Length: 114
Length: 112
Image: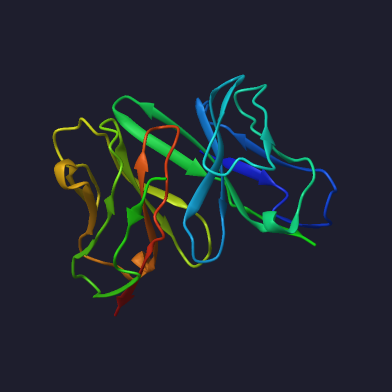
């Protein structure tokens, strides 16, 4: 079964305490992305990766880091979280295969920074 | 920054009827395709349909079809034979495989 997993699903933390949200996919997709969703808004892209060791900034990269050391994993790192990073985070993986495009999202991680 | 306009913040449709959700965008990048996503009230994000910039025919995926008019920078989603489970937020997102920008969404409610 195609799956994107994220952990944790819910996290409450304090300002400045480093955290990592993990993302893993089992479809051998090349592309992976991180998004955040704030109330009343669509998703905004934080970072994306086109393959192992290839990452680039999305629209709102400030305050975030990513790495892609293995194809299946794409962790999101908040070195020093701040309250304005309180949000719902989605990881996604995708690929264009055999003329068809497929994309799957993780279930989301709800982060609260106090 | 690219601007995406989904002019219908909320819409109602009768069950079994067809509905069109509008989306316009202002990118000048000719390589941009168009994605549509669904987000039910449960919160998950679901990819629905994609059409590449150079695809000649409008994309279809089951009851979903795209009315992609590049010259007008418009890519409307048509849902045929609406079902109660279609009630959700719908987001359009122009972009490439890696980088997309989401609109603010249209909330669709299907009435029995």
